Structures are given as C-alpha cells and as structure tokens.
Image 1 (cartoon, rainbow, N blue to C red):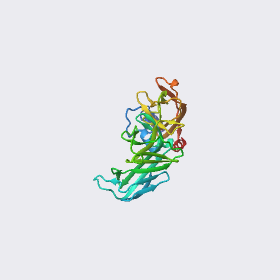
Image 2 (image 1 turned 180 degrees about the vertical axis):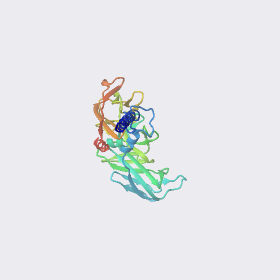
Image 3 (image 1 turned 120 degrees about the vertical axis):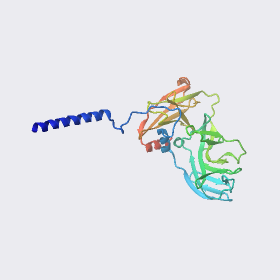
Image 4 (image 1 turned 90 degrees about the vertical axis):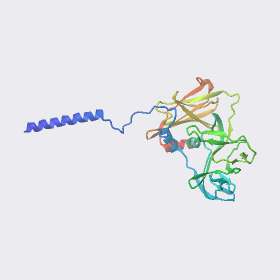
Length: 327
C-alpha cells in the first residue's frame, strides 16, 4: 500500500512538472511586453501613442463669460485683453446672438508651449518668427460662434520688444498632423492686422480660433539645410514628436516623420543658426525626452540634410513639461 501511495505521488509530481513546462512554453503571459514598436506610418490614426502623447502635453484654455448684446464688451485676462463690438455674432439662421456666452482664450509666447500645443511657426513650408500665438473662441451653450460680417475682435497684450515687421496669420486646422499658418489678407491699418506699440501688440481680426502675429524669416541669398534626427529604431512617428527650436528666435519648426527614410526631418532652414532638437516619445506607460544642440550647417549636410544623433532618456511627463517651459 505504501509503495502504491509513493508511486501515485511521484506520477502526480511528474504530471505537474510536465504541465508547468507546457504552460511556460506555450502560454506566454499576455501582459508581458512584445518588444519595441519600430513601425513607421504614412498616415497617423487616432489610436496611435503619439496622439495620446499630444493630448497629455496640451495646455488648458482660460475660460470666461460675459453678456453679448448691443453694447461693446471688454474681457481682461492675466495674459491679454479681448474687446468685442456690440452685436458681434450671428447664429446659423443669420440672427444676432445675445445673452450669456463663454470665452475660451490662450496666449502662447513661449517656444515650449508652442510644442505642447503642436502649433509650430511655419507657413506653407516657410519659417515664421512669432510675436505670439492666440486662441480665442466664443460659445453659447455647445454652439461655437463666429463673428458677424464687418465685425472684428481686438486683442491687446504686452511684449518687451515688439517688432514692426509683424503681420496677421490664421491657423489652418484642416490637417491635424500638419498644422499650418495662413497669411491674412492685407487690409487698412486698424481694421485687420497688427499694430506694434510701446511694449505691446494690438491685433484686429475678423476671425476667431487660432490667430498669430508673425513675420517670415528672410532667407534671401542664404545657404539652406534640412535637419534630421538620428534616433534609436523604437522612436517612430507612431509614438514620437520632434521639433526644431531656434535658440535666439521665437521660432519652432516641425520635424515631420518620413516613413520611407524612417527619420524626422525639418524643412529647409538658414545655415549658421544655433538650434535645439527636441524629441518627445510615449513608449507604453513611459515617456522619453531627447534634446540635442546643434548649429545649422550646410557644409555638414549629406544630400542637403544634416544628421544629428539623439538618444532620448526616460522622464516623467512633469519633468518633460518643466524642460519645455524653460525653452
């Protein structure tokens, strides 16, 4: 009897080991990482980590409310002053909108905030120098309002060194992966455009949403070069963003993901400018930041492209935001 009990125990133990062996080999833990994702994409879908990263970086708008009626209204926020004429908005039926409305605003003057909001200073491939990017939206309930024909908003904010070169630009949001600034049509001063005063700007715009105060950076006769971020293979356009930040100018250019070359590459820029390349990535639940200083150098370019090596390191999202705030 003892022998039978012993034999049964041995057989059960062997079976258990055999089953455990099968489990280890054929049933991998589904929560284990499957290795880095090195895929590049010709078009980006909303489910990719890069879009979750952009949402995590976004800044909050400032929310105010006021009564919309026949009287002019001025709303002063810590960043800027917004002035609206009376009866300035029409509804979809063409009738004048009145009553309580909500005003959402944001003024961006820091390069790191331009990165956080994914609003680089570029217009149809050309580099802009910004005097400030502004978001302004009016809502009545859930309905977004637009200004009535012939009406304009006046936006005033301080700047320590305003430039008389500034012009008005509007944000083209039709392609979420390639935000673009479109020059406003020239108009009579004081009606549409930018006025540069003593340490302040005043903008007059018949449109709402994204508005920019910029000038084109002059590249006449300049030697031009593109910059490429040379990254480890797991940093792709599906999980990362890259920007070219100009150290001595209020300018930030996007570095677009090129799926064929598997690189982030900028548009052509003037040689001889000190820049910082910023790369931010979301890998699983972790975030990474890469930054590398360089001087744009056409002599160092191969085929018109200057390659800059960058190895991002793991950071918390708050540490990344802190770095961006210092740009």
